[in-house]
Image (cartoon, rainbow, N blue to C red):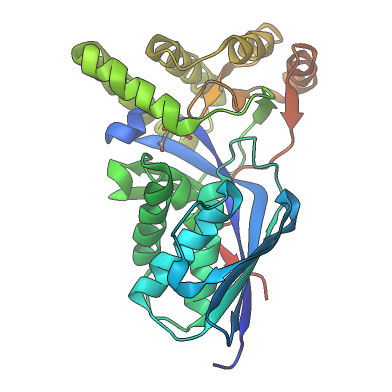
Length: 325
Ligand code: MEV
């Protein structure tokens, strides 16, 4: 092996429309964001798995390769460890690997650091071992890894980390369609509250068990909003997209996944003149998003701030996974 070290990076994501319904096969629109996770994978002679994630205070994590995926694994290690384990299951080798991760964004915000870590780790391993594997196989391996850890998830975050840009994602990844959009007039507000995606996704599943007809009708209606939003985004009609985001938020509220803090940031953005606003992702906390005209941008930003949110400057439509060396 010539190069024994490879660095890759993958972007986080923001879900623009279609949250939760996407878990049930309906379409969503996701955009990759400008904050990335970088992963350096180095082969070592001894058969150990080592990991340093200095941003989250993981120093000198080490275990034998045969123990990968076994025992209690810290949350900040598990995604890279299981990604490496799943890769090596398909492409075995006799040495060990050392991984260093570096995150440009706070893992608590909900930009999908898990999917970005998994995709970045797999892409580095593929490059390091000169493995001939299709992007779609990386997608499936990454999606499986996230499911191994979280138990739930549609895989839209994996697609955003891998392909980048803005995508329509449907049917667990059977359809992944890039949208050519020049700029999204987006503002992102963080609630300061970390959401537990798996618990919220499960709560929606429980609601669906009790009220299947009603919940399925909500998902179907969200799917229709996403279809219309796709066309309006391509036309650049952001005012209409804002309206569709408002309708999407009404349905998410009906599903019971919004929160007081999300609602107060969303109302603040709307009252300051945003075209539309909604939660982004599982709900319960994490981020809200708003679309707004340029002349209202400062007022909407100030209103979110005043309501206790933190405005995060991220650019959507970021490049997917790439080699950094
Ligand atoms: C969470 O970020 C978005 C959900 O739709 C779950 C998923 O699609 O994996 C709630």
